Image 1 (cartoon, rainbow, N blue to C red):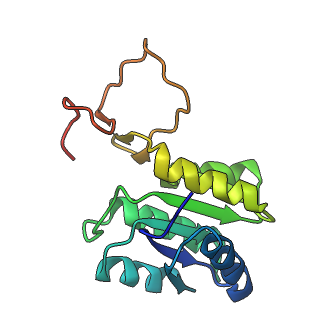
Image 2 (image 1 turned 135 degrees about the horizontal axis):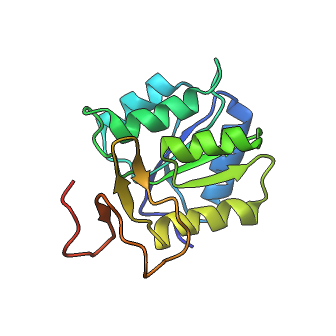
Length: 169
């Protein structure tokens, strides 16, 4: 995997943890990486320029600010890219936290401490296996289902990459 062409934003209030992620990604070619320590600063960075991928810690400073950032990226009318691939990192893997991340609209989830292989697999999934986006009254984000079900018919719009009949969002 070669990440040279991507612009990455890493958001973690623990500078050491952010530097570990940055170092791993640099080892596979990432050069254009910016760090932010707050959700507010991260949103400012996202608004200021194109970002290809967001890596965010779930528990920023005052609690679940990482979750709030993901929701804001997905639903705020001012968000420049609600389809942005988002990887959430967390040291908390209780079911309620994983569900909160999923329901906020994260694309991939990885628990800390993570392995280099684990991080790179999630990155590869984000880049090479983009997931369809779903919009409903209560959710906007990547399709939560991991398997294709040819019998399933969505009640609301499902947008699959390259689908000419996808609803324009």
